[in-house]
Image (tube, rainbow, N blue to C red; front, side, top):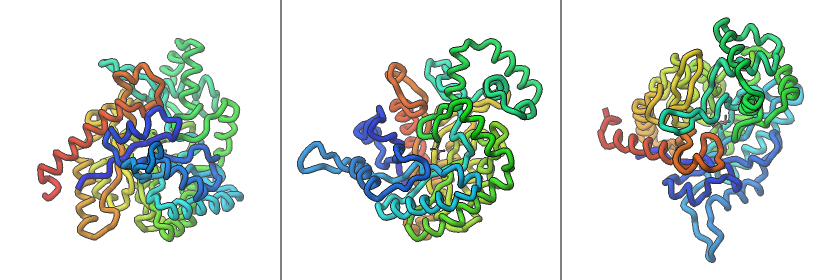
Length: 406
Ligand code: DNO
């Protein structure tokens, strides 16, 4: 049996409609109540309403099922006080637990979240033009350093980069127009779709300042504290948690990062050893590090994978990368999908109810007609449709080949 094909929908204002998603062949919806401020409780009423909207077409009487299910929440963001381990964290954790209970009551089986400090996923360029004219998301280290050193003027930034990156950053900054500098700043701190809030420069500096005394060890401890409190509630509520890896999987702005490597993931799943304390296996994020052996990680950590984000990244020079099409780039998608299907087989043999792992094609290129439209970066319909169609074809090929029985 194949994976569950899901699609991220940004809610009623998403230019990609539920009907579009159905036509793309997905059956699961991945979404969030983006309007709820970070830390507040997600009520049963608000969850129910959104679930009805997703699953039922009310435009005719009697109403008709759309053929879509709200399968995953991505994300319930974690309040910064919890991440920083502030004395007020228990109040926000109590809210988080309440939200988990409510999600369980409404019957949504998985919640995705991340443990990235201050910023969620980060890119410097949302429109890198590829040789075929498609646009891709990219992270350029010298540009990122130019922002950090010459626009943010972060204390300590000088020690964060090797000399050659600093020299490139300086040259890059000097050659940029004020418009280009503004776009760079906006890309980095104004918030990407579905991410944390956006910040102004001053606000951003003070947010970074909160981490002055938090090193990786402390930051990891804060995560363990959070997990010990929430996982028992997740178990009770029948809701599986799925932590998303750091994107990119390396420290930014001198902030701690503790969800980047296999040993980070091992630490996390062992804090409370249950399938309810699991992973969102994002191949594009983890794949930026050459030391992450993705198919091997699926083999070793497979029983804790509650959700898969399938996409590929291509490492470039100077610690930079861009998003490749789904079957190209550095991610060995063939062996990743083979390993996921083998994991599903094991679950089947063990009679696990969650035998089918939900996946979504993540971050497509902007192509064809979407180049003329306003779209959410990485989430335009046609590019994602291409990605999903490729992944689905690869999956079917692997299934038919009998490879997963070997
Ligand atoms: C980006 C996404 C992330 C992800 C969060 C999970 O496209 O993968 O924003 O949703 O990090 O909390």
